[in-house]
Image 1: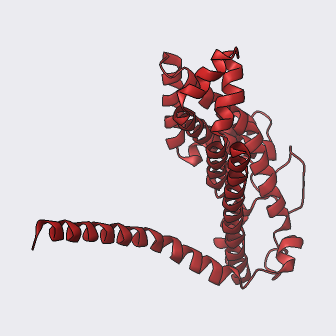
Image 2: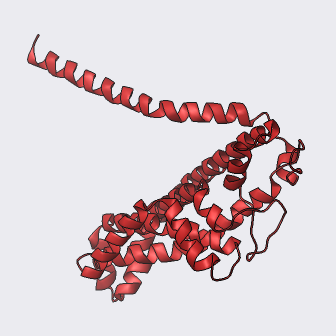
Length: 282
């Protein structure tokens, strides 16, 4: 065997090992999707999206209130977290060498590793106990706290990848530091930041523990921000541990809707990223 043949063989083995690793990583995802679709599609119908939950022990009904509640709580969390996360990421990237930026980076990494149930207990103590009321606002606050470190660190890393010549060119043309950052550097990293925001949304969309302590749950339809509100994750949890077979089927359907929401968000993020990149290249 020549040296060239040996190198080609080693290269082929390495490529095959990488391909096998990718397949092994995709196997759990494929099984999860298969079981969720197989079980959830049976209970998914028009009533599931338009009807309220049936009385305890009765078959039928839907999760219309929980679907609306999920979008409301997630939207509240996004409104709270996206501005704070992006501005924090800008500060950490522009003042990377300062002690405060290092402290903020350490705090973001630590917060990102805090269990979601601990965040739920924390928000319960500051937003539920003082008002003696579970609410959609408290749920949105809990989810927003979970989003902030993800968005901040993603924004920081992407801004650091922007070539320094773009910033220097803007400053040379007379722009202030803030104007150079928000009109030149930030738009250049916008496609990646959008992807990071969607990843944060995907992270919080499936959270249950923080909502159990904050928004609790509600079997009735409500859009009040100061009242308990139903969400898909909490209803899936409640139905899954119940003793009723019909509730088990609806729990699978709720899980399928959650997976579909995350998938649609990912597709929309890819579409928005390509649109933004296309506009920037023109």
